[in-house]
Amino acid sequence: MESVIALFAPVERPEQPGRSLVEQARQGSRAAFGQLYQQYSRMVHGLLLARVPHSEVEDMVQDVFLLALRRLQSLRDENAFGGWLAMIARHQAIDYHRRAPKITELKENMLQEKPPEPEALEVLDTIRSLPDAYRETLILRLVEGLSGPEIAVQTGLSPDSVRVNLHRGMKMLREKMEGRAAT
Amino acid sequence: MNEDYLWDKSGEPDPEVQRLENLLAPLGHKLDKTPVLSLPKPIRVPYLLAIAASLLVLCGAVWVAWQRTRPAWQVATVSGTPSLKRLAKGESISTDSQSQARLNLNDVGEVEVEPNTRLSVLAIRPDEQRLALYHGTIHALIWAPPGRFIVNTPSAQTVDLGCQYTLKVDADGVGLVEVSVGWVAFENEGRESFIPAGAACITRPGKGPGIPYYQDASSELIDALHRFDANADQSAVAVILDKARTRDAISLWHLLRRVQPDDRGRVYDRLAQFITVPASVTREGVLAANLQMIDSLWNTLDLGNTSWWRMWKSRGPK
Image (tube, rainbow over all chains, first blue to last red; front, side):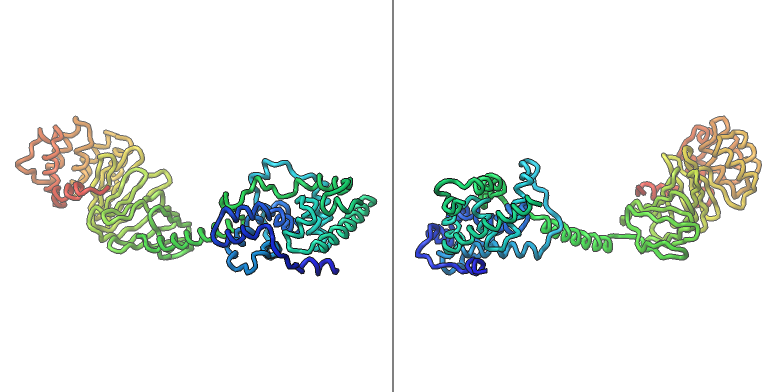
């Protein structure tokens, strides 16, 4: 389970691309915060998708960013913005299961959008059955389209941890998918 | 497996990884569809339910407070199971065969509701308290100023003139008022009957108030009045005139205004035998339905002055 430990062990970085944006956002720039959203929303979406139903995730991304905006003044190290945001997203996912909503909101876009492929949902379920460290990185890589280095930067993990998680997670996913295909 | 492609998308694409990317990409974040902070935060269903519940509680509290403060008849159960405690405007009370209730409204009076009765409140205002009796029986003891307590029935409105009375409405909508103390006026579309204590009067759907009569009058007289009221039976006029006593002059006075013009002369002549006709009244004037002269005849019945009647009418029970 060393990969799980790695997941929650941020590394020191001299600078992140979003540094100036974080500072501007802390000073009240909504435009800067909007750019942070553009940069980090896929990461947040992926972390949430690893834990909550697909239909809930888009709204929860907004919730995470609004919460972050309110708490931004409490962020001591602006270089840690990615990891800090990732932790907010994980806590929101935990809160979602605490609230355990029994009613799912029927959104307009559900009626307008093409429903996901059944096979895609099946693969997503298989990824979700993997250990936390693997499922987060695999979803960020395969679903959100982030590269390994991008995942590392945005989540605050070390590139080595991400690489290990991707490799081991993909191996485990293949085995599970082959096992299901065999049955 | 091409590790480089999985890591940073470089090198030869791994077919399996590429297939999964294509398969799973539609589940990814749609950045172009959810620009941050440009849309109001969606209200999630649990929040919506919480807001709706809060509004319901608030509305309920306001409603209860409003119910408690708005004027209403207080309801006391005499027998049976009426469960109402208050009867406000727009509300109804129905009693079954075992139930009786007593309604009380300060400064107005008291109404007892007999079994098998349906009653509702049409208005509660300082200048008018109006009920509707659909069927059944009520006993009213009213101390409000005359003209302010009114009960609608299917065929007439009953205007209290300071009294105690019983009002019944049967399944066909036929109403009967029996006055114990004071006076009651039945009124419908300009047709009116004044009923003093000891008298009764029937009102019928489509015909309105009938001719009042004292309850100690002969059965022949009462029966003839009913036939006249119900069927405009002109043959009943002779019986009425024959059976009328001095006290029944009130019935003759009402009959005077309702008989055919050809019969008005003999009704006037019979009435004149029981009263002292004022000098200002002429037979010709009465036959011509002179309202002022007919009012003058009323003043001789020792039942109060017509100016008093007109006063409460002009004050306007609505």
